Image (tube, rainbow, N blue to C red; front, side):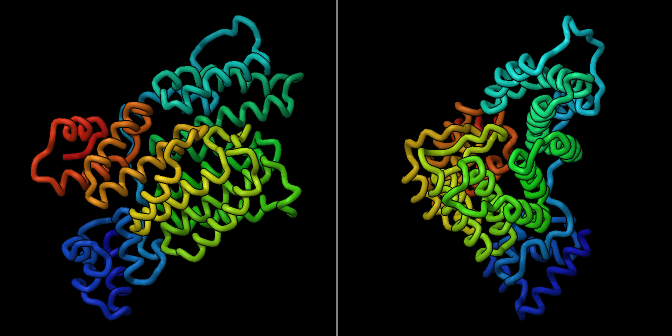
Length: 397
């Protein structure tokens, strides 16, 4: 893999008539790393680094990615979610029903658990998913209860598992959960949040071409025939997949495609009236004008325009967004933008706020570690606050 990446990088660089030093100057990637990559001394590189090189070489980022950019799951996460993975496969602890579950009862439990998921309280969530998966399997398999309602409910529970597996870098389990949840989804619109999870999985693994392919297909399938007649759910589902097209395209150094998808998403967002629409099938899916602005801020940060990200953040200041995860992901972009502008106290303040509001989620964000690592590298000495936060998000030494 290392040799393939090195050969490909060297070949494209030569075709563009650039020396290693010139490529380093254009991309902002150190000449030492470029030499290391071309010599095959490193199997892969981060998606962000590949995008910088691809932009300087005028090729797609995926042309330089020969191995997925994915971290190994943490041992504690593998252990925490072990029984959930087994339950997903239909293997449960020995536990007799005190009484048979009902769709209404499992739905009520799911509603109680949903705030734990959205609030990032994962240690509390994990043990509750096992009985829910067991009960949902029972409802679907029961001769008189294998209804659309039972299957839809099981699909949403499996969707919750899929997102947890993505968040903790357990991609094989995520793929399994997504496939099972899609089997239970009653229609195309209900499947959209699962397609989103699938795209997010490919993006997190660094397979940008696959993410673009999946997102584009779903966006085409979900596009309303007449926007003026489309329901809020239909517009939100379409907008959701347009977001993923833009997200993948901007990382794959296809800015024109990313801008086109963002423009269509903006149309969908404007057509949704009365604020952001919180999808009844999606666990992390609100959509509307604010969501589109958050995407624009994220895209700007990807292409190194932190001033644009901060300008959008100023416009969104004080916004009451319905979902914690996406909002805090936007706040990470804001922290990264402050750090890029060397506004380190402001960046640190944003990260500390995220820590207070969604601590377990923050620990799982490699982006947060990257922001702090960059700040640490540029400072001679570290304050106690920086050292403490670096330990909390597990910045490597």
